[in-house]
Length: 146
Image 1 (cartoon, rainbow, N blue to C red):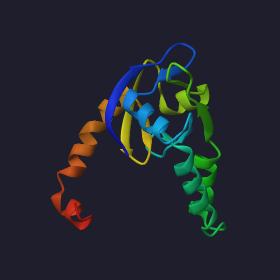
Image 2: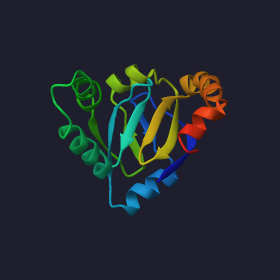
Image 3: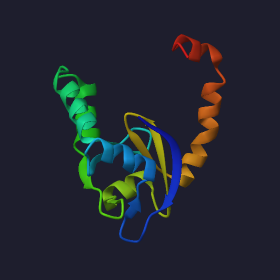
């Protein structure tokens, strides 16, 4: 399980170091790559290979004629790329993904359970106020059982 958030700098080639505890989790599971894809919130998501396979399997069982399924396949699945973790613990974020997530200098990694979200640090900071407003609605959280 991935938890916590960490900030690293991206180099001019698009390489960034994964947080060491995230690398350890992946290594313990025998992974040397992650699947990187676009996310609807304007960030990127990184999945360990087994989790990514699970996402693909779930989507393949959904009715393929539904517009929401097609949109998910076209937006999320078609943007996915396998990123190898190099010996220095870095991944290369392709230019397409950097452009999508508006990643320029600082990258924020957020562990959110079974996946890692990758944000532009600036966009993460801008979104904080919105999330706090959502969380102030205790009734909505109670409805979720939290």
